[in-house]
Image 1 (cartoon, helix red, strand yellow):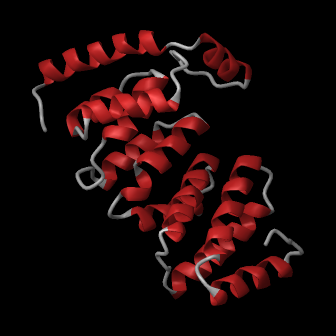
Image 2 (cartoon, one colour):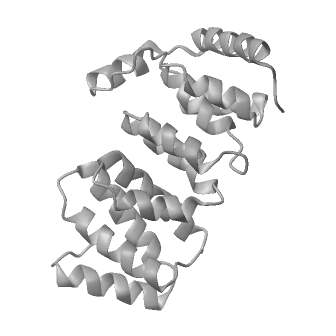
Length: 209
């Protein structure tokens, strides 16, 4: 459902006001203590935001408007209400470029990116990036794709295994965890995939399966 810009602005204003009712100071303080530097953070829990998203439903224009707000809850809500089949790759690229916090990257991957019609292409592109948040998203998306029992082609297999092994040997703990999860999901696709994963891990003296 598309709305004119004036109506969208009013709805965004109402949504931002509703965050006051969801405010959780302890959650917000905990995030600040962990180094999360949102311009504005009400500390709203994810279940509360999901409930709000369910009330709103999918809405492209509203998602675009919410994302532009430098507010934690607005960005997470945007990922929840953006219709995956409507959003163009160019928009997703912009969102990814504007993502600076791990929480937003993970929420975007779980709420939206895994459902995109072009999700595998983005995942393979991002996991090979030299940017850690891109890698994180790429591996999270692939974990969900493998969980859905969607098998990669031969080229995809080789690319994934190579990048996952490289990430597992990297210094970023979050990327390592995401890569580990994805390779575990990859191994669960079947016996051949399990053997491929274990063989690759053995070559670099890693035992996580």
